[in-house]
Image (cartoon, rainbow, N blue to C red; front, side, top):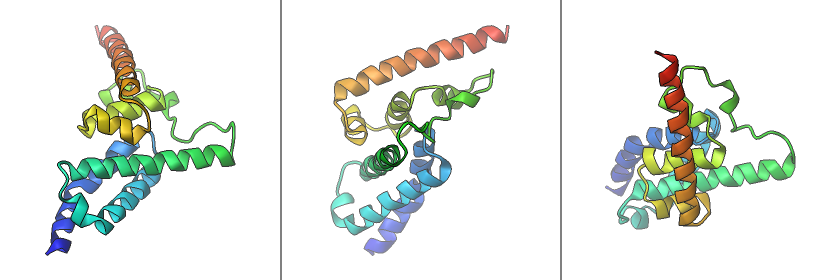
Length: 159
């Protein structure tokens, strides 16, 4: 019955994880590939992963690590080339929360997505991003301040 249990877990969380990674800056295909790899790893370790408090949190962390590895490899192969995941330049004047997130620098965007959309604790966000919890807290503070300004400017334009 472990296979059916994993299938239910996969069905419940796959799309959510892939969407979060796309919001964190990965293109749709890369987000789905990283998510697929994270779930494949979860399946191989299912006995251990299913006993965790937040097995979905483990998957988010593994998937984000996949993205970071991909981005580091891409930077080594093509130094100086603009990152494919920085999609902030085409934001429309009228911002939604999703578009406001897209305006953030990649590191702040990842922190916001993992903390508030994936609902991971700060320590898990830090692990997924490969940094200290203080760095995550600072990134979140800066991101929320920046989004508040962007959204307030949009509200003023509507009057």
